[in-house]
Image (cartoon, rainbow, N blue to C red; front, side):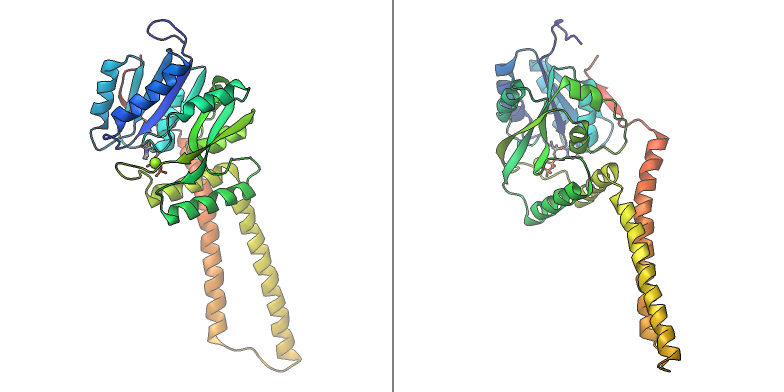
Length: 315
Ligand code: UDP
Ligand code: MG
């Protein structure tokens, strides 16, 4: 693709923005400074994901001073993964960098990502050595989640990475062909294969605003990751079913033995209630797990547009 001045774009940077008004100027300065060392033919794509503050105004100011800045303004909040996906749909660089818009991912690291790419890796992800200023809860749940995900999927999703990474245009090409509604980009990129490498960094803390990932969003994100890449929960349900059936068979044998041989009939309200509540619980959890998969099938069958653009300066 060609830019306004008919030059091919060497590097695209995609930045999802949700209530980041205080930081957008600094964000632009730091990204621009780093990226222009790589090439003057860059494009910076800011996707405003239904921010409730003045982020859009700040972005519009940037487009005034730099015609290599593009913005996409969503009609509402669609979520971080969808915002990045919109950027991927529009970008045209030889390499594409995905970076958070809250400066927790240092833009200066793009240089290192790019150097690694030059060594011949189509995918270079930034791996957190340390996560500053994040709650114990977030750190431990994230750690547990990624380790579990690794165990139950066959794809190699790198540990301790966010979406901060550099991908080659070939990877972008295939990423665009993945039509799923429930995006889990870091998994999708890993699934594609190619040569992958990493660069280590210390993750800064968020200086302004607060995290856009509420607990609800985090849980949904985790479920998307699991259901998109693993059938293990469904197999687990089957296994639990067989185990419980087997166990109850043994108990039946014991009850018969006890009644006819020992002449002691097993009585008891307690054992009845406990066993029926236990099986009731297991059944509901199983239905819930199946339901999670079905609701995702449903979403994909409906095939609605992933996002709605209210306004943009892309042609
Ligand atoms: N973000 C977004 N939509 C959302 C939530 C977050 O576009 O619904 C953006 C946010 O502006 C930031 C990035 O996604 O650039 C990562 O979000 P955040 O910093 O809130 O997540 P955390 O770092 O706490 O995991
Ligand atoms: Mg953040």
